[in-house]
Length: 450
Ligand code: S3P
Image (cartoon, rainbow, N blue to C red):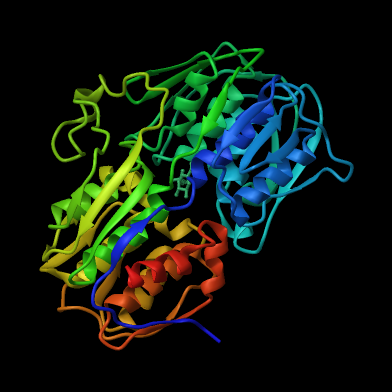
């Protein structure tokens, strides 16, 4: 039977979100690249990151689990094994599919085929295939565009590459390859995307430097990482924050959540809409104007060399909401939370618009179609645009049935919509939450008991 999420009168209490998925993927892979064991505290235990651990094991690393901690015994930067049948199963993990080829492409030898579930086979990989080939990599994909993706280890040379779309996955893939390539590799983003890789590699003493929107990386033989402490995932926490924003009378505390400025775009958008959120969000570098005014040249002073991941508490209260427009440069900083901007828009005064977010069409599902059709089915006045959506606040949502389409973030969106609706919402495919947030339903229902 599909779970129902019925209207409630207010959420209260404290909750700790699951560990960050992006940082957990990176911790497992960077741990596998190290020569000495790396302890990872608070590694995310969810389907996507279990896929990464399985892959790391298949590549020859050891993974020991001790009292909630993982110890990764790496194979070194150039020591990835070739498993007997050569296949690596990434499951549903798009991040793993796109960042791992960078490491494998620069191995002295070996051949690996990365494949995954049915959704993975629809996720574009040309964005990593093309720049990797220009580094001299031997990479093949179906029609050069789609998984499965086969990589053979080769000698690589550094390149300068400008990303068409800000993508932390592509940036990470090229940084990994750059550590194994001769000369220097430069990756320039059109606007900033999450920077967990740069921070983790700075801690691992890798020759990675940032200059404005460009990351420079040189070849290295060895990484040294003492330990990684994974903070709570701001993208998972955002579903709880959004619930507290749209259910009148709510006040919740979210503990130990990552506050890295390249991930807190949703919190800033929600605040702009009128939500009351108190927390020590990391500030963007002074040169970043939130994408509203200055040109890219004016932002070249961007990004100091940070190597830590800030984390802390958020205190969130429901308040009347006003519409806003989310512009393209804000999109990478809130990419996985944009479905929630649509939800807040249903409860806001005026028309909320998200622009420049065509990337949503190539996530685990087409998230523009999933959000628009899903929320419209619950009574929202929302329409899709080519690169986003527009929603007119109509005093809330009626309720009904919501199809998660196999997408974890859509499943959580449907559940939160139900709590704030007039008649409740039945979510089809709630089990998709296993991908990033297995305890979601329990955490959400815990906030109903205060
Ligand atoms: C991720 C980057 C984002 C995000 C994804 C995780 C990462 O994707 O949507 O959920 O961990 O690097 P893109 O890099 O494709 O924007």
